[in-house]
Length: 250
Image 1 (cartoon, helix red, strand yellow):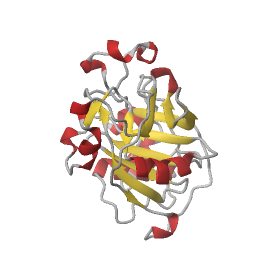
Image 2 (cartoon, rainbow, N blue to C red):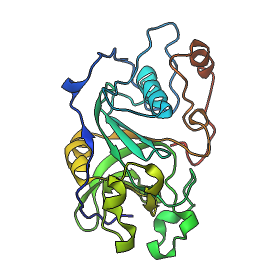
Image 3 (cartoon, rainbow, N blue to C red):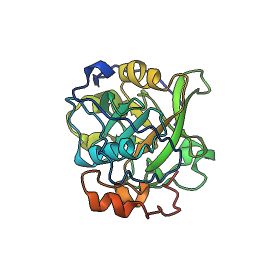
Protein backbone atom coordinates (compact mmCIF):
# COMPACT_ATOMS: atom_id res chain seq x y z
CA UNK A 1 0.00 0.00 0.00
CA UNK A 2 3.05 2.27 0.15
CA UNK A 3 4.45 1.92 -3.39
CA UNK A 4 3.50 4.68 -5.83
CA UNK A 5 3.64 4.67 -9.63
CA UNK A 6 2.00 6.76 -12.36
CA UNK A 7 -0.82 6.15 -14.89
CA UNK A 8 -2.86 8.73 -16.87
CA UNK A 9 -6.48 9.23 -15.83
CA UNK A 10 -9.27 11.76 -16.14
CA UNK A 11 -10.91 13.87 -13.44
CA UNK A 12 -12.45 17.29 -12.90
CA UNK A 13 -10.80 20.29 -11.28
CA UNK A 14 -11.97 23.61 -9.88
CA UNK A 15 -10.28 26.63 -8.41
CA UNK A 16 -11.78 28.79 -5.68
CA UNK A 17 -12.74 31.31 -8.36
CA UNK A 18 -14.83 28.68 -10.18
CA UNK A 19 -17.34 28.40 -7.34
CA UNK A 20 -20.91 29.56 -7.89
CA UNK A 21 -22.42 30.71 -4.59
CA UNK A 22 -20.47 32.38 -1.81
CA UNK A 23 -20.02 30.80 1.62
CA UNK A 24 -20.18 32.21 5.12
CA UNK A 25 -17.18 30.90 7.02
CA UNK A 26 -17.29 29.93 10.68
CA UNK A 27 -14.32 31.43 12.51
CA UNK A 28 -14.51 29.01 15.44
CA UNK A 29 -11.84 26.36 14.84
CA UNK A 30 -11.78 22.94 16.44
CA UNK A 31 -9.84 19.72 15.94
CA UNK A 32 -12.21 17.48 17.86
CA UNK A 33 -14.28 14.81 16.14
CA UNK A 34 -17.51 16.34 17.42
CA UNK A 35 -18.21 20.08 16.96
CA UNK A 36 -21.09 21.97 18.57
CA UNK A 37 -23.71 22.87 15.95
CA UNK A 38 -24.38 26.56 15.43
CA UNK A 39 -27.91 26.55 16.84
CA UNK A 40 -29.89 29.60 15.71
CA UNK A 41 -27.17 30.83 13.35
CA UNK A 42 -27.20 30.82 9.53
CA UNK A 43 -26.50 27.46 7.91
CA UNK A 44 -23.12 27.17 6.25
CA UNK A 45 -22.76 24.74 3.35
CA UNK A 46 -19.97 23.32 1.21
CA UNK A 47 -19.84 24.54 -2.37
CA UNK A 48 -19.67 21.71 -4.92
CA UNK A 49 -19.97 24.10 -7.86
CA UNK A 50 -21.31 22.15 -10.83
CA UNK A 51 -19.94 18.83 -9.60
CA UNK A 52 -22.48 16.09 -9.01
CA UNK A 53 -22.22 14.29 -5.67
CA UNK A 54 -24.26 11.77 -3.72
CA UNK A 55 -26.60 13.03 -1.02
CA UNK A 56 -24.35 11.47 1.64
CA UNK A 57 -21.29 13.30 0.33
CA UNK A 58 -23.19 16.60 0.23
CA UNK A 59 -24.57 16.15 3.73
CA UNK A 60 -21.18 15.33 5.21
CA UNK A 61 -19.37 18.20 3.49
CA UNK A 62 -22.12 20.61 4.59
CA UNK A 63 -21.73 19.41 8.18
CA UNK A 64 -17.96 19.87 8.05
CA UNK A 65 -18.37 23.49 6.96
CA UNK A 66 -21.34 24.28 9.22
CA UNK A 67 -19.65 22.86 12.34
CA UNK A 68 -16.08 23.91 11.40
CA UNK A 69 -15.07 20.32 12.14
CA UNK A 70 -12.13 20.71 9.76
CA UNK A 71 -10.61 23.33 12.06
CA UNK A 72 -9.78 25.79 9.23
CA UNK A 73 -7.85 23.10 7.35
CA UNK A 74 -8.37 21.84 3.79
CA UNK A 75 -10.42 18.67 3.72
CA UNK A 76 -11.33 15.69 1.58
CA UNK A 77 -14.56 13.71 1.44
CA UNK A 78 -14.31 10.18 0.03
CA UNK A 79 -17.52 8.40 -0.91
CA UNK A 80 -16.75 4.68 -0.93
CA UNK A 81 -20.12 3.64 -2.34
CA UNK A 82 -19.76 5.95 -5.35
CA UNK A 83 -15.93 5.62 -5.48
CA UNK A 84 -15.50 9.42 -5.65
CA UNK A 85 -13.21 11.92 -3.99
CA UNK A 86 -13.95 15.60 -3.36
CA UNK A 87 -11.16 17.99 -2.30
CA UNK A 88 -12.13 21.27 -0.60
CA UNK A 89 -10.22 24.28 0.62
CA UNK A 90 -10.56 25.31 4.26
CA UNK A 91 -13.69 27.37 3.54
CA UNK A 92 -15.52 24.51 1.84
CA UNK A 93 -15.00 25.53 -1.80
CA UNK A 94 -14.46 22.53 -4.06
CA UNK A 95 -11.00 22.34 -5.62
CA UNK A 96 -11.67 19.20 -7.64
CA UNK A 97 -13.30 15.78 -7.83
CA UNK A 98 -12.33 12.45 -9.34
CA UNK A 99 -12.89 8.71 -9.29
CA UNK A 100 -10.90 6.62 -6.78
CA UNK A 101 -9.83 3.03 -6.36
CA UNK A 102 -10.45 1.56 -2.91
CA UNK A 103 -9.89 -1.56 -0.84
CA UNK A 104 -11.11 -4.77 -2.42
CA UNK A 105 -13.23 -5.79 0.58
CA UNK A 106 -16.34 -4.08 1.90
CA UNK A 107 -16.06 -2.84 5.48
CA UNK A 108 -15.33 0.22 7.56
CA UNK A 109 -12.56 -0.96 9.91
CA UNK A 110 -8.91 -1.85 9.45
CA UNK A 111 -7.71 -5.22 10.69
CA UNK A 112 -5.67 -4.67 13.89
CA UNK A 113 -1.94 -4.62 13.17
CA UNK A 114 -2.38 -4.63 9.39
CA UNK A 115 0.09 -1.77 8.98
CA UNK A 116 2.94 -3.98 10.20
CA UNK A 117 2.17 -6.92 7.90
CA UNK A 118 3.59 -7.76 4.48
CA UNK A 119 1.19 -7.16 1.60
CA UNK A 120 1.46 -10.82 0.61
CA UNK A 121 0.00 -11.85 3.99
CA UNK A 122 -3.12 -9.67 3.72
CA UNK A 123 -6.13 -11.76 2.76
CA UNK A 124 -8.72 -10.47 0.25
CA UNK A 125 -11.37 -10.06 2.98
CA UNK A 126 -8.93 -7.93 5.02
CA UNK A 127 -8.34 -5.38 2.25
CA UNK A 128 -10.70 -2.70 3.52
CA UNK A 129 -10.53 1.07 3.33
CA UNK A 130 -11.42 2.21 6.84
CA UNK A 131 -14.08 4.85 7.37
CA UNK A 132 -13.50 7.78 9.72
CA UNK A 133 -11.98 11.19 10.26
CA UNK A 134 -8.21 11.36 9.77
CA UNK A 135 -5.63 14.13 10.13
CA UNK A 136 -3.55 13.72 6.96
CA UNK A 137 -0.24 15.13 5.71
CA UNK A 138 2.09 14.78 2.74
CA UNK A 139 5.17 12.57 3.02
CA UNK A 140 7.44 10.36 0.92
CA UNK A 141 7.36 6.60 0.50
CA UNK A 142 10.47 4.41 0.61
CA UNK A 143 11.09 5.18 -3.06
CA UNK A 144 10.92 8.94 -2.52
CA UNK A 145 7.54 9.41 -4.19
CA UNK A 146 5.08 11.79 -2.54
CA UNK A 147 1.88 10.48 -1.01
CA UNK A 148 -0.73 11.67 1.46
CA UNK A 149 -0.61 9.74 4.74
CA UNK A 150 -4.17 9.26 5.93
CA UNK A 151 -3.47 6.88 8.81
CA UNK A 152 0.17 5.91 9.26
CA UNK A 153 -0.42 3.16 11.85
CA UNK A 154 -2.61 1.16 9.48
CA UNK A 155 -0.55 2.13 6.39
CA UNK A 156 -3.56 3.86 4.86
CA UNK A 157 -2.46 6.39 2.27
CA UNK A 158 -3.81 8.30 -0.71
CA UNK A 159 -1.55 8.35 -3.76
CA UNK A 160 -1.29 8.39 -7.52
CA UNK A 161 -2.72 5.25 -9.08
CA UNK A 162 -0.18 2.42 -9.08
CA UNK A 163 0.32 -0.01 -11.93
CA UNK A 164 -0.45 -3.09 -9.81
CA UNK A 165 -0.82 -6.49 -11.44
CA UNK A 166 -1.62 -6.43 -15.17
CA UNK A 167 -4.97 -8.14 -14.62
CA UNK A 168 -6.00 -5.41 -12.17
CA UNK A 169 -6.18 -2.77 -14.94
CA UNK A 170 -6.15 0.00 -12.37
CA UNK A 171 -5.95 2.94 -14.76
CA UNK A 172 -8.75 1.48 -16.87
CA UNK A 173 -10.94 0.97 -13.81
CA UNK A 174 -10.56 4.64 -12.90
CA UNK A 175 -11.70 5.66 -16.36
CA UNK A 176 -14.95 3.66 -16.44
CA UNK A 177 -18.22 5.50 -15.62
CA UNK A 178 -19.32 2.97 -12.99
CA UNK A 179 -18.06 2.52 -9.40
CA UNK A 180 -18.65 -1.24 -9.60
CA UNK A 181 -15.07 -2.01 -10.71
CA UNK A 182 -13.24 0.39 -8.38
CA UNK A 183 -12.62 -2.04 -5.52
CA UNK A 184 -9.19 -3.49 -6.18
CA UNK A 185 -6.52 -2.13 -3.79
CA UNK A 186 -5.14 -3.48 -0.52
CA UNK A 187 -6.95 -0.61 1.21
CA UNK A 188 -5.12 2.49 0.05
CA UNK A 189 -6.84 5.16 -2.03
CA UNK A 190 -5.61 5.45 -5.64
CA UNK A 191 -6.43 8.62 -7.60
CA UNK A 192 -5.63 9.72 -11.16
CA UNK A 193 -2.07 10.99 -11.55
CA UNK A 194 -3.07 14.42 -12.86
CA UNK A 195 -5.65 14.83 -10.12
CA UNK A 196 -3.07 14.08 -7.45
CA UNK A 197 -0.54 16.48 -8.97
CA UNK A 198 -2.98 19.33 -9.70
CA UNK A 199 -5.40 19.08 -6.77
CA UNK A 200 -4.34 16.87 -3.85
CA UNK A 201 -0.69 17.87 -3.59
CA UNK A 202 -1.27 21.65 -3.82
CA UNK A 203 -4.15 21.47 -1.33
CA UNK A 204 -1.99 19.81 1.34
CA UNK A 205 1.38 21.45 0.62
CA UNK A 206 2.60 23.24 3.74
CA UNK A 207 -0.37 22.18 5.86
CA UNK A 208 -2.12 19.23 7.42
CA UNK A 209 -5.68 18.54 6.36
CA UNK A 210 -8.64 16.35 7.26
CA UNK A 211 -9.77 13.30 5.31
CA UNK A 212 -13.32 12.09 5.87
CA UNK A 213 -14.02 8.60 4.53
CA UNK A 214 -17.73 7.84 4.45
CA UNK A 215 -18.80 4.46 5.88
CA UNK A 216 -20.61 1.77 3.90
CA UNK A 217 -21.80 -0.47 6.74
CA UNK A 218 -22.78 2.22 9.28
CA UNK A 219 -24.33 5.66 9.13
CA UNK A 220 -22.30 8.85 8.91
CA UNK A 221 -23.81 9.97 12.20
CA UNK A 222 -22.49 6.85 13.94
CA UNK A 223 -18.99 7.48 12.64
CA UNK A 224 -18.70 11.28 12.74
CA UNK A 225 -21.52 12.51 14.96
CA UNK A 226 -22.63 14.57 11.96
CA UNK A 227 -26.04 16.14 11.38
CA UNK A 228 -28.15 17.34 8.48
CA UNK A 229 -27.57 21.10 8.31
CA UNK A 230 -31.00 21.59 6.70
CA UNK A 231 -32.82 19.85 9.58
CA UNK A 232 -32.98 22.20 12.61
CA UNK A 233 -34.08 19.41 14.95
CA UNK A 234 -31.17 17.20 13.89
CA UNK A 235 -28.76 20.11 14.35
CA UNK A 236 -29.96 20.70 17.87
CA UNK A 237 -30.01 17.01 18.85
CA UNK A 238 -26.44 16.61 17.64
CA UNK A 239 -25.21 19.13 20.22
CA UNK A 240 -25.55 16.42 22.87
CA UNK A 241 -24.23 13.57 20.67
CA UNK A 242 -20.81 12.01 21.30
CA UNK A 243 -19.66 9.43 18.70
CA UNK A 244 -18.72 5.99 19.96
CA UNK A 245 -15.08 5.13 20.60
CA UNK A 246 -14.69 2.79 17.62
CA UNK A 247 -11.65 2.20 15.39
CA UNK A 248 -13.41 4.16 12.62
CA UNK A 249 -13.52 7.38 14.67
CA UNK A 250 -10.21 9.21 14.37
